Amino acid sequence: MVRNTLSCDWRCLVKSERIVAVKVGKCIFINVYFPVYISDISYHTEVANILSTLDSVIADNNDCSITLGGDFNLLFTNGLSRCDQFNKFVQTVNLQLCDTKDENIRTVMKLEMLHHLLIISLLAHA
Image 1 (tube, rainbow, N blue to C red):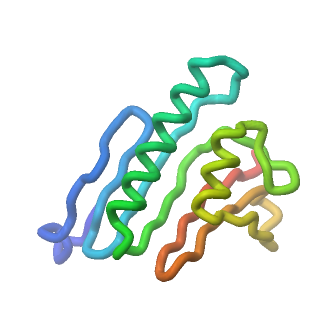
Image 2 (cartoon, one colour; image 1 turned 30 degrees about the vertical axis):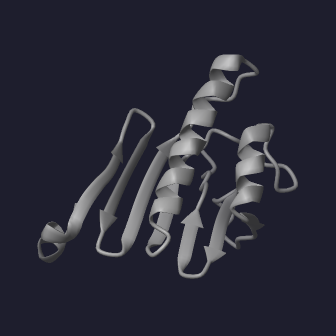
């Protein structure tokens, strides 16, 4: 939903099975749905495609504030997941594991770079 006053200033950047990215003014909102982790070439291919798209959207909109959220289907231990591709992406874009006081949230990762804020994964306890 976009406020009526902003309806002329929004654009869909990506609309796919796994990613939706919209631009509203100088803000990019990205929702991503990663596949459930399996140790298989098809998983790694799908993740590579997702990460490539995310990297392109971020790079192409470096003058905008960016918020990224969704379901990453990854659990983190000591700031790392079991998916090496994702860990490398996190390192490349300088993501850091952030502590939270909210007991209902297990993991929050964010990137603060200039005026960008990427919220990478909010995994609520069931």
